[in-house]
Length: 272
Image 1: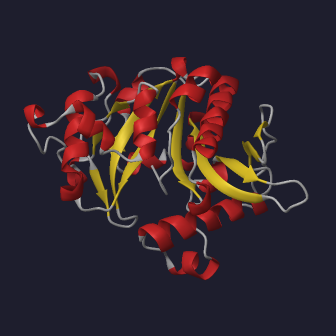
Image 2 (image 1 turned 60 degrees about the horizontal axis):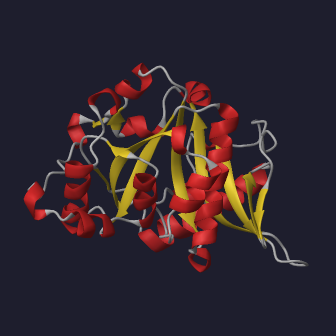
Image 3 (image 1 turned 90 degrees about the vertical axis):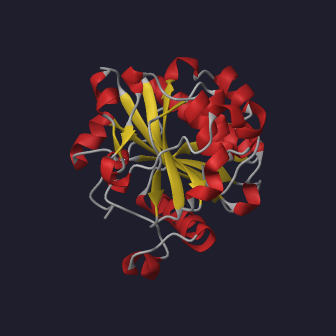
């Protein structure tokens, strides 16, 4: 499914930190390796449902992969073979036109974002190998995103961020905290599609402590909020991936290298 798509070289200088580096995938083989990592984490670790073809190949993939850029964190100590240990999928609005929509539009109405007039980029399929869930890996992923955003002059980033497990009762505190304290402004507020909409105001505001609410969130969601992220209206239960999803929106005006170094997630869960 990738053979007919021409991959571009990384449009920014490769960022290194010791044996770790971050850049875009440059070959179909590298994308397939990232898909193997996604399968290991989403299907084997989190419990996502795999199609028969995914099971046969041990890869997580879909129709969006061929038109996305795939950000990779690579671990390669001197004299050893390179290993992809983290990945993020990036989809520019110009690329989404080739598929007809963004992945997020399967769960959310993003009309307010499209109407904003800025250059959009969707973030998704974030995961980190279980042996590398450390801050340097997350910092590199975010520094790579920042460089990519600056190169392509992206104005707004958005995407589905996930709580592990599609049991909404497990996330009452976190969802309520996001609803009460981080709701997107009306002009930038995606809304979950009516047929799958799940209300997030599961606890009254007075019962939600800012401190405990924030600490109840998955690491990646904390990172988005530190970057000024806002949350759309309504959650979605994704039973295929065994997650509870929210829609995150981030203005990119703060995504500078120094800001990312300071506010990148301090830890890495398996997914967002």
